[in-house]
Image 1 (cartoon, one colour):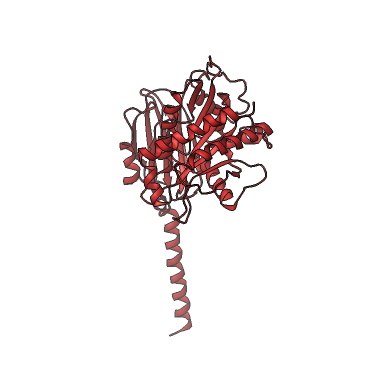
Image 2: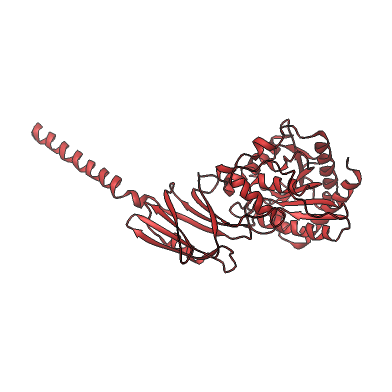
Length: 406
């Protein structure tokens, strides 16, 4: 076979390969973008729409009137069954969305049309992959009418957070406290897009801690000289900083964040109580737990525009009295929980939890049990165990109130 034939053959093969690569880069790119999940989280405060894809989405947004619609065009995307399913996710009681529609606007452009029930201010941003989530496009719909702090303190805080203005809350209007009652804020961890830990039998941390928090709230409501509030009372995602800010805006006397622990070894079990540490964690496990809990904002989805609160308004060194009272509150709760569930550690632990960083509110984080332990997961799902935990926490609160430093 001649050398000239081999040379010619190599040129032909290179040409074929180049043509194939060119076809992938020009035509096949749209096929590479795949919608893998869609979610809609309605709440009284705001509604979140999440579009999850294998690669980052590029988009353009605009409004149309008669009827009022928010339109989002997504480039290099073909409508698949996953995206089409979003039309079935709108709930009748959603305060902001009347209807969702999707269609193939152009060959390589998918269009999402959000028909609205009221005027909204959208906050749209992208999130990089984290945990089990891939690339996400997040669409938060807030009411256009600005909230007054005394009418909806949480919405007011969220508005400031999204504008990067979540600063001092000391001048916020405090709810009427006629009897000088003790103000207690309960914080059910996670919520909405952020499920928290998930047990072997698919129990979600965000669900069980909300149930426990409601039970504790109902018990506190029966007590004289106590006022109780919750950071969330529905399945909604709240940034960690907003949870702290809500406690401060209410001038809380104490703050209890409720969680359900998880670890890679299923045999890990027991209850724990954590307080803030400014000098490092009390154990490697405590450090790991704080790191995972502090990732809640990245998992739940926070626009970078509002991530200024901890840097500018939370003191690096919490007041000595606040830390002292946090330890006292933690010990009081731990001493009651040990009668309900074995303790993972016999003493309170310390770690740098972002949700505990209010400089003027004694705060603790209660890990009720290990949701990753099948036996404790099963107990966490029962009303009996939830009531036991709530009762124990109330006893701890009452004991703390008698012993606290004022």
